[in-house]
Length: 570
Image (cartoon, rainbow, N blue to C red; front, side, top):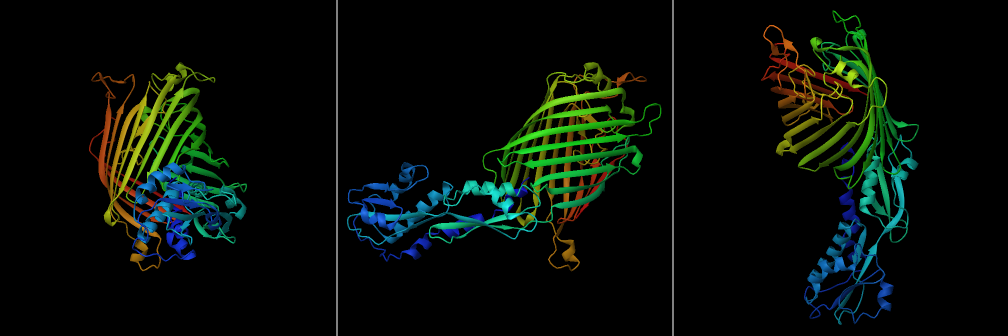
């Protein structure tokens, strides 16, 4: 989601271009000596135009005064900043330049960047200086460079209106919002308006055809449904001309009969700067499990979220709250349990309903990026049939219809000299009781602890830590003589750790030794190298070799495992 903020990096330069004190000097040249021409400054009068300066009697002015100006934060705040600079100070051009600079910076810090301050011709022998403060208003909004999204659509994103002052916070938020769509990339520039005292906003856009097709494969499956996953999908980035985003994906395994899944994701960017997110999926599994008369199972999920961004949502920052609801219906744990010995197929379907409340924050700058995310899931009451404690216990021992659990994620990436990187990611889940397989935290595999089978440990309470050191990327295409390559290849080294603690688990017993098959806690640890290769907009490939540092209860005996994956898109 942080992509949306990088597109406005040129804005500060544009602000300085229209706000430079030198511009005002060029408009009204005032030749002043560096030597003081009066003993001390008695006061400064801020006025909107020269004509008002001719009409005002200013000999009585003491300190800072403003006439017919909308000062951000009020005149008192500006007085606190300026009066220590000039009161009882000798008048010189150097001091005058400093005062003008401070006024411009004050306006800019208040989110009003397009302002010019200049000195009109005047008699300063009485010790009162008149400064003209001109804040440009918006002329018009121009759009250029767009091919696939209309001028009207881009114009609707800008909430500033002609004739009104230009506020940076509003404009930056608008640009960041339009860039939430991955098919759009807009930069904003200020250009002189047709009328005096106006500034136009020019949106320079680079958008692309709002449909993307992709396909790929990885080994994120399990023994029950097949370790290999093949998938293909499409993303439509301008649904019905509204700028909404719709994604569909089909996933299967090498033996299509064993596993098939359909999923969708819909994102609606609302005019009042909120989001609606809808997603769901349906999967059918039919593995060959000896001893089970019913080898076919299904899984269905439908989820909805309403997200409310707030605070600064630009310059690499995002902050939002969200709430929503999940519905799940399934009759097996084939997708979630990787070991065939742990597979359960129940006689009927199970319904799960839960409410969700979450918060997300992220920030990125030239040196690092940070992210924090927390979600609270709760099922306070039974809502549907097939949603009893007995139904839940059949699929997960001790699971109850009423539960609550929280899941939080904290991540950081530090950008080192020479384009090296260090990243750290921590995830934690704490539950009030035993959970169904779909809500348990799966440890093992590419997303958690590399080198182990996918979800080899499914647990109610879990901690997962990941650390990576990424070496300086380089271009393979450039190495082979390509011009203007848009690819990068990098090596990395990682350390992964996972700790799982079950809640009131009813242990299965090893009859020969009368000992529990599962220990009270389970932990995984691995280290290894990895590679990443990306061709912008077309290819993303990864490979990690995880070496196990600890064997789990259901370990297959291997000492290491490769985690592979690739995506081709167009």
